[in-house]
Image (cartoon, rainbow, N blue to C red; front, side, top):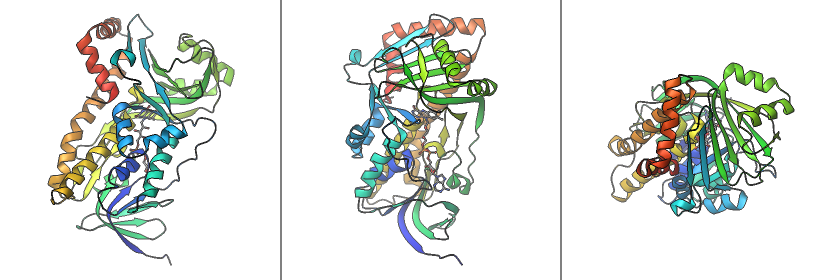
Length: 395
Ligand SMILES: Cc1cc2nc3c(=O)[nH]c(=O)nc-3n(C[C@H](O)[C@H](O)[C@H](O)COP(=O)(O)OP(=O)(O)OC[C@H]3O[C@@H](n4cnc5c(N)ncnc54)[C@H](O)[C@@H]3O)c2cc1C
């Protein structure tokens, strides 16, 4: 017979990925008792750069700094990028951002997901009132009463005044709330791998819009590049079937030899691509953050950044309510979080989908327009400022 232990928390965070851990760190000074439930222990940071990396914008770096985790990330391994170069392979359209022109030292960092998680986890472990429950898998949730009940696969039961769903795109918390994520597939997948390049990456994040989908070369601290290559499903299959040499050749050709020859130095992983956004983020004592609430195309490297902003915003709303002695888990409090985040998240989802279709089209009129558009933006100061703010996460 399985053991049933009931432990009570003020907040249970379902999911200890990037957004769940960010929320826990951001709440660490509130005095709330927090439990984070995560099924998989974060991967260790190895000598070689891990396959999964994220482009983290300046606004998110500020959140990590406030959370006390940025310095640890810098000690572990980060790769600042100082420029961004985006172009359309079908024409002459291009856009270029340079941190020096903006008076900034960087536009952001490329960071391994494992580094982000480990640094945030270090903060969590030092905070007295946060329990890291891992490995622990949520089996079911009973959220109908004021006191929420979370049942784990090992039979343990936990209760909480509030449960936050930071449990990713297949969120159990979202399902328990009866909220659907209307996820639409792009009928594309992303190949993720690491390469060495003949020429220096110049601390630049490179993105080429091919008619088959966007191809990104993200600069890594060891001099290599992390690749995110979005293609139709059949093309992905063909690319994965190639040997290392054949794949490297396809990659360098598609990237127009901007960094010379390319050598694959890692396995190739494949991720399905889709997008979706829930209608409601909150209910009394319940909230969704990160991929549990919205997923977007990785072409602008924004998914994790949006989740980090959700976490920071929700923590702020709760902390403000606690300080004002208001009901911190009540619907009217949590709605503030929803109101503050939903517009930005929706805008980003819609923009990414628009970009994806605009740049995926071979219609000659659209091809012409997007090339003119890119060059116009590159030369029109105020419009470029809007794009820059978006890229830095300061919109
Ligand atoms: C190819 C690719 C490249 C990307 N590049 C970027 C980028 O450059 N920049 C960027 O900002 N974003 C990027 N993204 C998006 C980013 O990876 C995601 O938006 C982000 O990881 C979402 O974080 P999350 O914590 O919300 O969800 P997740 O990372 O999905 O974390 C959810 C956590 O919950 C846990 N969990 C789930 N169910 C349970 C359960 N029942 N019990 C216990 N634990 C559970 C999971 O184990 C997991 O750790 C990219 C995405 C892809 C696919």
